[in-house]
Image (cartoon, rainbow, N blue to C red; front, side, top):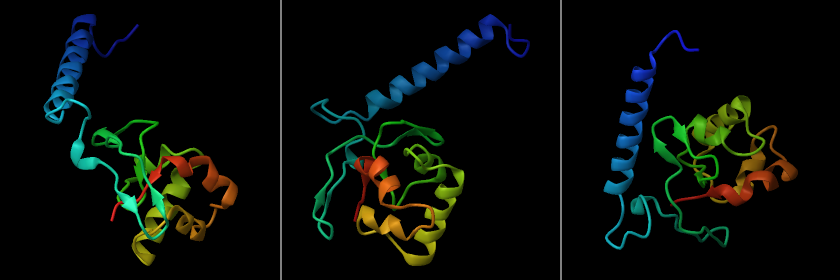
Length: 133
């Protein structure tokens, strides 16, 4: 089975992880208990006329990405960008490089300036993109 850990050790690790994740989530509920991570709620993007739906943060903890969570393309790390349909390590690096060279994205269509992202690819993940001011 697993030569690295015993069953007891695996159970303990899972117990600690689940306990920490549960405590972290519970500690971040707003006063009404209606959403997690209220400070990460998306805002309207006036320059593009798009209003993102309020949502929870895209990461649970550093390096752990929820695959269906919205991604702020102006703040996203490589792992978050890779969670978008059609974006692999190479395109994630290109997005980060483009963002560093040309500044913040004002609307999702600004991603079209990244080599390898065309209109069809953008449509695959456009609904998961948010842009915070």
